[in-house]
Structures are given as structure tokens and as C-alpha cells.
Image 1: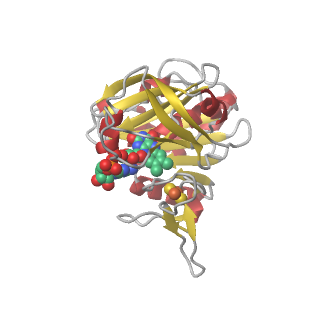
Image 2 (image 1 turned 45 degrees about the vertical axis):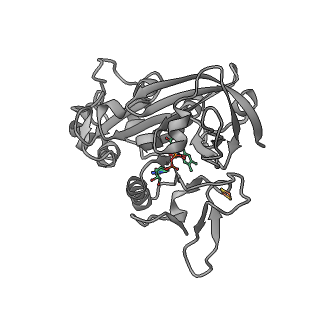
Image 3 (image 1 turned 90 degrees about the horizontal axis):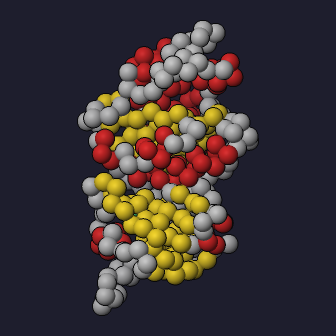
Length: 312
Ligand SMILES: Cc1cc2nc3c(=O)[nH]c(=O)nc-3n(C[C@H](O)[C@H](O)[C@H](O)COP(=O)(O)OP(=O)(O)OC[C@H]3O[C@@H](n4cnc5c(N)ncnc54)[C@H](O)[C@@H]3O)c2cc1C
Ligand code: FES
């Protein structure tokens, strides 16, 4: 079920260089929106003197407050549409279609989950983390960006009951390098913990020994066991190369996982075929990112770096 609404802009804050967080009043979308789903926003020049850009722009649900009837998105200015969006003022109304698409599959209560996000790919994972903590899941987030000032969702994540490790390419915060380098460390737990411990608020010790957070708090046995437990499921969103690495990591260990894909979109509701991705294999068919996705099981996607992802 989706809605077409003129949604009032509550705030449209600049949160970094070319990065914005926009909150809409949209009660129906807030009460139906699931993590991984997206909204399709009409962006019109102001005053509306031209038809360009004609197409709506898709953005993942970043935050949902169903009690206040509000939803938020986190976005980066890329071109015309997002430049116009950045000028939207509180009180203005924009046409919003949503919630659209197929979101993440939520696991059983108390599952051990690992979320890997890069750049704006963190947006759907922040809302997902909210839903997972409500299910009493153990949530570890690996969050990568080019530089510290782009880690704009970090504060939000740190307010949640999640463990968050960061990586920046320039080393300005957390681990210096690819966020996927942290995957092995987190998975290996004790053996590699030192390398990530220096970078973030990580754990020391090995299974059976005392486990103490760098804040000084000692972990319960259950928490300590969870650290060394393989994730039950991995979720990822971000650059294709990053998701390809995460998918390989999951595949090698037999861990199920889901990725959220991006594609150029027109209608956003499965009608125009503008977002179709070719299925891989002899019986080639197509999947529509907007309505069959944007979330797909990792093992159905063939990541061809430099090209669009294909689905198996
Ligand atoms: C399901 C879905 C969810 C999304 N969620 C978010 C989100 O939460 N936050 C966010 O910032 N963006 C998100 N995006 C991407 C966002 O929709 C685009 O950045 C936006 O449509 C660009 O519009 P524009 O008019 O500013 O740029 P355009 O004028 O359309 O494009 C400008 C330039 O940017 C390039 N470009 C456009 N889109 C992308 C992209 N996705 N990645 C890399 N380069 C691109 C174009 O090729 C072009 O060179 C999502 C996309 C999809 C499909
Ligand atoms: S955008 Fe039209 S079918 Fe997906």
C-alpha cells in the first residue's frame, strides 16, 4: 500500500558539505513505511517555471516517527533534483509517493545482525537498526565514509542500542581504509580485535575471559558470547564494490544477507520498466528495482563492478 501526499517539510537541515536531512509530515507513510522502503519525491524549481526535472527522485526512509506522523530522508546533492530539494523550506509542501518497494526482511527476535553501510547507503540501515533493536536483536553497524565530516548518521547511531564501528578513507575518524576491512575483524572477534579496538569503542578479551568495554562496563556472559557469534544475517547498502565484498564475505561463511540496490527510476511503482535489471543466467529475465526491490537477497545479485548489479 502506498500513498500520494502533499507532505509538509518540517525541517531541511544541512548536516554536512552537500548533505541534508529532510523531515516531512506524512502520517500515512510513517505508519506503513518499513526499513529499506523508499519515497519518491517530486522536485520542482521554485517558482515552478519549468517542467525539469520531470521525474521524481527516490530516497530511502532514514527515520520514521509514527507517533509524530513524520518521516525523514538523508541525502547528498548530486545534480539538479537534489539541488532543488536542498532549497525546500519548512512549511513548504512537496508531493511525496510512498512507501514504495520491498524492504529488508526482519529476522527472529534476539538475532545477531551485522549492518554494513557506506556513504548515503547508511540511510536505510539507520531505520533498520531502530526496528532491529525493537526486536531485541544484537546490532553491529560498520559505517564507512570518505572522511569524518561525512559520517553524518553517526550521532544517531550512537544514541541507539547498537555497536558502531567506523572507517574513513583518509583516517580522520576510526579505522583508516575500507569499511569492509572491518568485516573480518568483527567476525574474527578476539584475534583481530586489537586493530579495530584502537579505532572505535571496541571490546577486549576473548571468549571465556572477562569482557570489558573501553568505557569500563563489563559485559554479561550473553553479550560476550554474542560478540564471538557469527551474525545470523547481514544487511548492506552503499557502493557496489562494497556490497560485492560484503556479499562474498557472507557467501564464504554461509550467512544469509540482503542488499539494497539503486537504479535510475521513473515511475517508482513497477509500471515503466525504467529500473529493470537483467537477470543473470540462461533463463534471463528482469527484476524491477523499484517494486521487486530495492532490497534483494545477496545471493541473487551478481555484482559486476563498474556496471550495474545483475540479479541471478
Ligand atoms: C531506492 C533508492 C534509494 C535511494 N536513497 C537515497 C538516499 O537515501 N540518499 C541519497 O542521497 N540518495 C539516495 N538515492 C539516490 C538518489 O535518488 C539520487 O542521488 C538522486 O535521484 C539524484 O538526483 P539529482 O537530480 O540530484 O541528480 P541527477 O541530475 O539525476 O544526476 C546527477 C549526477 O549524479 C549521478 N547520480 C544520480 N544518482 C546517483 C546515484 N544514486 N549514485 C551515484 N551517482 C548518481 C548521475 O549519473 C549524474 O551524473 C536513492 C536511489 C534509489 C534508487
Ligand atoms: S521505475 Fe518504473 S518500473 Fe521501476
